[in-house]
Length: 192
Image 1: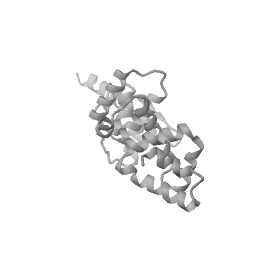
Image 2: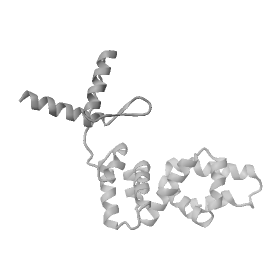
Image 3: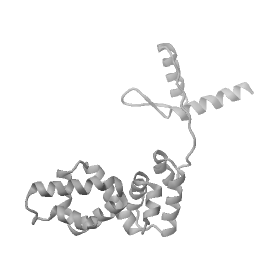
Image 4: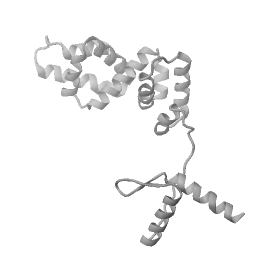
């Protein structure tokens, strides 16, 4: 039995009991790890045929609302853009979800653009993919930890604010990197 038929069976009131519906829903979801591609496609088809039946899966499975709707977005994306199972598995569910979120809000996306996004997804780490899709230049960054006492911290804070950092409501600073770059440029000019 395919996933669509199994999902329809979950919401089918002809099953003998609610317990039977719950057991069947859990069985379908337990196979999710073995095939997110098939499940996501089936979930999208299932939702298109009966949007209210999704609540049954929410109530009786371990999937959270966010997980379920992310899979629904992935299913819509792979269905509407004819993504092959091989391509979907090579990119992975997390990256497909990021691409789906990026694409589904847009009016028209060509097959070439989708292909380029899939290539970018293979070459980019998940945590950097959303920025890369938005056109940001994925760059390698480094973090530095400074161990400063109160006086040094205060001096650094005030200096960064003079070079463009801004205080946040909770007492932190934004635009620290921008301010630090300005400070370094100024120091470099004075050294020349």
